[in-house]
Amino acid sequence: MMMNELVEKIEKYSNEVLVGAARYYDQVEEFPEEQVKKLFDLGFFQSLYAESNTHYQHYLSNLRLVSHHFPALASIMLTQESHALYPFTKFGTSEQQARYLPELLLGNQFGSFALNEEHSGSDITEMLTVAEKVAGGWQLTGEKQYISNAPVASLFLIAARVINRGQEDTYGVFIVKQGAKGFEVGKPEDKMGIRALPVANIKMTNVFVSEDEVLGGCLNGEEQVNAILNRNRLAVTAQAIGISEGAMKRALGYVSRKRNIGKRLIDLQNTQFKLAEIETKLYADNALLNQVVTTHQDDDRFIAMAKLSASNHAIDITETIISLVGGYGYMKNNDIERLIRDAKITAIYGSSSNRLRKIIAEPWTAC
Image (tube, rainbow, N blue to C red):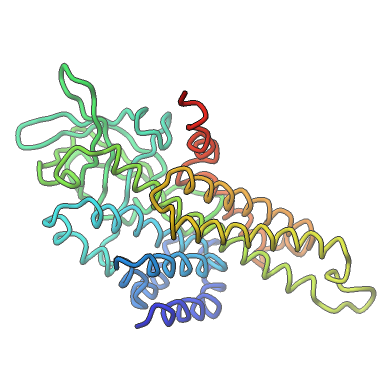
């Protein structure tokens, strides 16, 4: 299947099916198994790992289209890609890739990346989870908080501080399978938005990991974690843009309706000006994301700027739209209020907005 054909299929499926499914799963807060399977069956990830960035851009387009109607489903898929498929593809040994990638690619297994902790967020240097050397491998102890896809994952990548007796601590990413002794996934969290995304805490007590289950076969945690975060940030940028576009589409539909008395809302200059501002922000965010993917895909600062802009705009745009459409936007039968709730997470996961601002400001404080 040509990549543009896949994008067209995803758009058609999103417009025809996902809008109704999103409302249902937002209410019941369950994993949308049928819709996830459909995206895998359509080949959501199949052509992603070619050398050309064109395939990655199409993948981001697919995330954006899904996010028009069902941002939580986009969260599930981008977690599978940036937190499982990508780490194994970029850093995994040939044996690790052969062992795990085929099932992850088909959706027969779900993966999860556990970095966030209560007091450290996504800052690897502040982690309390530790890995200690033991005979034949490593022993992990610690707790991780708010881990996406954890309740459905069978495979976990755990970031940990490596204790080196008498030496400076280093960091590693360790492969842990669901059901390992001492490994416990908590109950799914009840969330404000993206409610169909399964999220849970993880607790590890002396979990044994063999030598061949260190990602990449070496302790290279800082580079690996940074790359995984950047990959996730680009995906969340696309998701945030998609949420904004979905809200904009709904707003245009409402303000363009004919009225029995008086002008349409779109005929009012104030409405036109506010929507013009939104359209300008969307164009700028799309342009920045395209530039980053094309020329700065490994640049921490450019990636941080793209996510910071798109996520902040998603929050601002959805809130502006509800002020434009009034009580209509407050009702659950039109999706705008759900998109407002879903937009909030884009400024939190994949690193908070303040963490991104710190990355952007780093060159100014280095001297």
